[in-house]
Length: 375
Image (tube, rainbow, N blue to C red):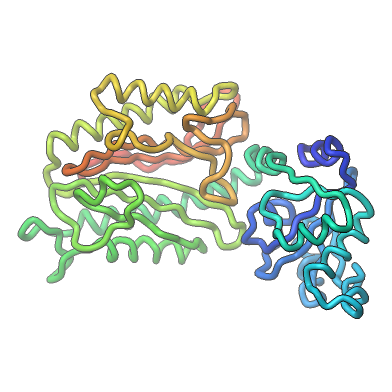
């Protein structure tokens, strides 16, 4: 019995019901079916789950989905629509007819559908069962994330190679006769990812004082002797799984401040990797890194270490568990990032991010790419 079935029984519900496209990570997880149109998912105790799809998607869903498949016509929706013109009310009547009892729904369930459904049957919201299930990755899922990480490292290497080959002119990096920009490095990395079947989004290539803002995307010419933070988090188009990785590099001579920050961040990442293990909370790992940075003279307010240490990665780039102030107990099978960073206005930022799996022996890093500041 898995956590979802336990939640259904504990709530006294007859079934769990979800509604959405595969852009909804829970739906993708439950069905492994990729669809741009919303579908209905119903799971009763002792069953593997059923999806209700359009006739056009029926045959494909039978081939790809891990759930049983029925069409909207088989579910009775078309008969309901003969006398009910309101779309949400008709869907609610179809679901109520299939379930015949109390319904457990996820937090992201559409309000309009939930409201109509609650007029017909009792409805309760589950807030954690699916998050806990998704947080414990199977070997198959870990394999999918590892494949994305391999593509991520290839793309990171391409971006760093572009920076390495640039020449310095007037304090800027040049590629041929034109200044090398954040956009040019980003485009080079995206080309690699797209060839590997991955979708990049909002890749960060920020330089100098820009890098002191952790999630600033970065624009314009890259400078010599300044930190360049690169953060990529692509998604595999076929499976939907993400990876996440950051490196900080510098072409030229970094300042003593940046050198000290880089060493502190690398040491903090090593400390975190040693601390992450089953049974420890994400908060404890985060506090250990906060204490280390405080001992080395860096704060945790508006500058210094200003974000969580890490997060789960899966069908969403940020999911449970958290390695932060309210981080939960870490369990075997969790895939999490280890990404300490320091950000100093007027100087810049340094971030190093690895991804790894929590196993019986601790944190097994999936990231193999070196952590070198100088390129």
